[in-house]
View 1 (cartoon, rainbow, N blue to C red):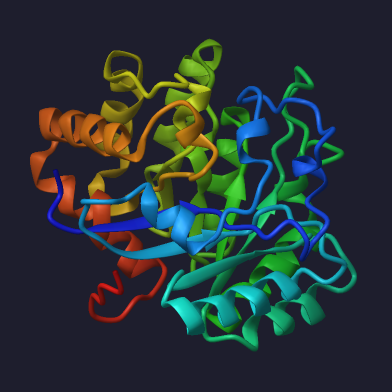
View 2: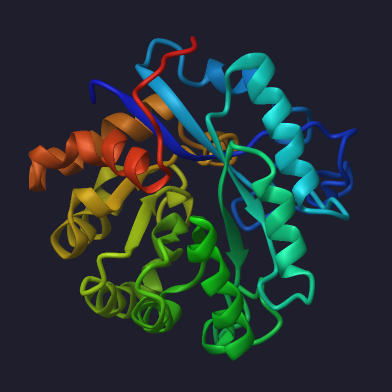
Length: 301
């Protein structure tokens, strides 16, 4: 087990505060399966239960697709929650980088010191299975690129939800905006059928130091995070970009529907130890601290 953990990707929600249409009682199952068990409030105390007995030092909240009319309202809520409970330590808000109101949304997030960046859900694959964006090649759109450039001016990072075929475009964005810190969530959501395409894409992004990636949301490879299924992906990621550009994220409470946090961490620690044992501290703490600009470790538990 790692000595210290910074969870770089989790969610919280309070169902009466925002619409959360995907968590409504009649919302259909998600790609990760039936999620009736998480159609309830998930707050700090619920989150910390998953890390009981583990050396969790800090956490990063990622926008929970809350459906707020103003995306900055979620960040305001999280800032208040952090002030009262000490958790989370950082927040990544939602944004549409093709919107005409990008500047206003960024300012709304930036009012709160907890804000570290924003996330754009732009996944769009040729099969139609992953279409969070209504069209392909959004990452190459001049408006998207211009608005993404505003982030680096503000000191914000950009989280992305993409599919493997978009990794080449991420590399292009990183080359165009070398001062922008880009984080690819969920290892670029590689399905087993796209392993070859994902491997090639990883080689493309390896050349750009401003791209980091999360070992999170790994249900897409295997819902139970079994090491034999994850091994080719984790090892290739370590070979291509190293532990100092990888970070662990629990994706609680979504991935915990099928795999406990303890099993996630023990499995990943085993895989990292097989390939790059010196990278364990980086993946579980140091990379997230650097990318999301944390100060000295503080344990609020």
